[in-house]
Length: 521
Image 1 (cartoon, one colour):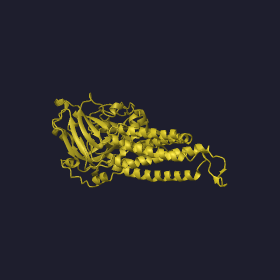
Image 2 (cartoon, helix red, strand yellow; image 1 turned 60 degrees about the vertical axis):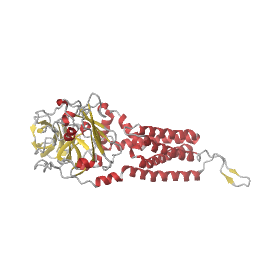
Image 3 (cartoon, one colour; image 1 turned 180 degrees about the horizontal axis):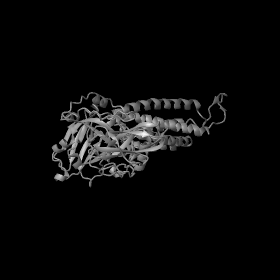
Image 4 (cartoon, helix red, strand yellow; image 1 turned 45 degrees about the horizontal axis):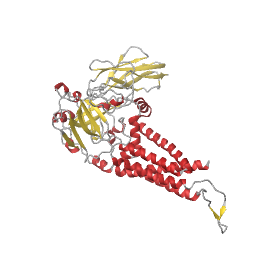
């Protein structure tokens, strides 16, 4: 039993040293080469859509942390097993460590933006882990009978447990893994040059400013989301286990592809020198369930995208252009595809460089992200943008389209109740019911509320900012004692009323009326 326990401990320590060494090497190679990041990214890519949606629903923006913890837990189990094996057959245990290193190396190199040097962290980590396992396992063999030398002095028999040697080696391994892992993770999560490049940015005044949010657009009712979502509170849904920290000083954007008569390339400063626009735009994730939190409104500063495409010679399909899809690529290999016709139809599609008065946060795409009002984020809101290619929907399927989502995804008319919360206990009498409704690029015409399946009643709309932003609403309900269901629906400016038919998020966004059940005393 002791051998099994010591073998498992040896395996865990070897794995910890392996990961710490890999993290340290990744400082020089790049954080994307860390085995946990590489394997985690591949796991995200291979995960079925239903599982991804389940993770987003249950863990929200912590889904990546849960995945990483799951990977570490699986590795810990694997490490314990090879540690036990190594006690009885050290070469077999070391071979197990080598397998882990090979998997990490191959996975890192085969990532969309992988290069051959990305194999180094996993390989070096495997060597370090194998060495630790070899040393520890060599000190664990079963306790032999007492023995003495020719002079009568006690000696450790061959095959006996070297307690002191094991403790020294184990302590050294634990110290290295703790210090090295902490340093490696910290440095890999912070690129000093990228942070400095963001800190040095002074956003120019936009040539076309958004102006003040109209009076009455923010109802400021307790329990409601504010009209403008603060940057730290803005939802984040993406596949990046490690947030890319891109150095704006070396960043470049290329525009090329079908129908491009003048390929273009821009630096970050090139974009800042162009005429900028400032707009309030609400973004919505296609993974947003009915009544879900993955929608937010911010004030964005950016370069009009249509102007850039026109400079490149791009024409919409309706004018004879050969490309009907604009594929945006991120520095981490993500691809999103937007309809060219939509990008060029006059809406405020932009390459955003600022969010709520500051340069984009790294979590939201610094230095540049793309926005197309009226389209779900998975086809329009590419973060950490580095490449725009003109192609066709027939020739290329973007990342999410290859995973069962629709290639074209206009945002559906939706509404949400923010207050009262589900299962709230309320006092009888006047109760404010309030929330938001959105139908980006069409605008909200009206919002209605009903209680317990009764007649729909008009809610009081907040002042509209633009058709590209959400619109708050409120309804004063004379609450009577009992259990009640409150429902909401919205109608957009085209006259289309939100459907009550329930549909999940796949393939092009959820539908249905949001409802909450409350108790009135």
